[in-house]
Image (cartoon, rainbow, N blue to C red):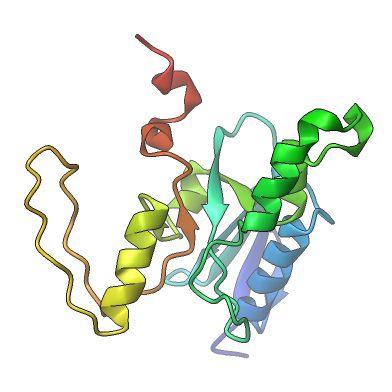
Length: 185
């Protein structure tokens, strides 16, 4: 009997229990971000119900998001995994043969982009833009933000410095409803 025991489900079937769910979640996420397991696998930890769900079945609608580094030992904690080197490799792709291109698959295998389904989205914290992420980091560091006077700018929610850290960032705010919804005229 362990008070931290978490039930493990794969595609809705209970397959066992685990005594260290935080370690298990981090391990499976790391395996997904490094491409050891498919990037289409969903990883959901329900802390309240003490359940860890893995979904690999077809038919789940997933959308891409940028990943934010939340490794406690990382120097880049709280920043996008996507770096200037990734962008430079994407820019160099046009001069490379097809098999040597970095491309979208390179971003996935580098862990800079991750696909999330609707159920997994409920367990993450998504910031709207990289600029909002930087503003949030400044507020958490104790800096005062200037009041926005431009009435034409996007209305932003107030930043709470006590809020849990962000885990993902929208690629573009128009993608919040998915690619299909954004192409409707």
